[in-house]
Length: 415
Ligand SMILES: Cc1ncc(COP(=O)(O)O)c(C=O)c1O
Image (cartoon, rainbow, N blue to C red):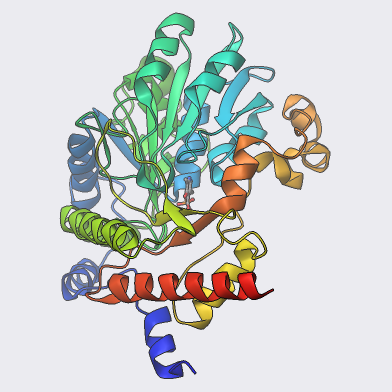
């Protein structure tokens, strides 16, 4: 019999976001200033946060947005995508990496993932790239950077725009450089599960003045009024109306994100420490049913979004991943199965999606491949664990995982 109290404690051990006293104080201070907006001026906490964030990544310009999704939408608008342009995207990523592209009528080409860690596979990318490729989108999944060098070599040869979706990898480094520095535009999210959180919110970064101004023009009409953000003459004529959309972040979200940004480095290092503990505990207890995903040597720093493992079905051939996870959860281990399957498996990217987007959708999808792709296999085996840092929990989790594996193995042999 399991102790149900202990099970509950274990299952609820991961709490995020941490709302500290400093965050509460910053919000109250902002409210006491008697204004919720800050759009008419070029100074103040929001602009300072943008500057701080841009400096951290190593970009010239940063633009706070209402979400990571609106940051990505702005990025796609900024590079002047035209209907029929080809855009290569990861098949295995969060829906919002790709869904904004549906509004531009571009031809979306899915690229398979590396089976080691689910990131875009540069070899498959090289096969699918062509002179028609206008942009390539990459996502640093789960905090593990994509292998950038081969992609930059392709960029030199084919000169496409590179868009980085860094929503799950703020602070991760590829060969000692922070992700977000490599793309023509890079986007981050401050949704509440992220390392830096604001409830909702996002930010788009670029070092190209023209790209920055197009992003401001698209969705920040109050700001473009200031003119300080629009200097190129072709843009200044729109300063009264911009292009008419409002993608600006809620100031309170920005205040919270700014405050949580102050403890980003300690969040990253606590998670790295507990990930290491997870890895060595799995090794020590000789757990074989799950394996942590591969972390390549080029990753010099990882900002873990969650701990991604793969279920090794050859160890327990009669036990499905779902049953295995449910056994773990019954004992209090917060193992999770996500529903983020490869994008070409969702109706949005199939013929139903084409219909919804009408004329824009004519050219936006390709037939989905038959089942059994690298992205399917990665998704089918993936089990994730929240990045728990609470003392003792990881050890307890691994102890239970090992016991469950042994019990199921014994059951399997008896069967
Ligand atoms: C990889 C990735 N891209 C984009 C997004 C979209 O960000 P938001 O939820 O802030 O719109 C998310 C959010 O979870 C994400 O994980």
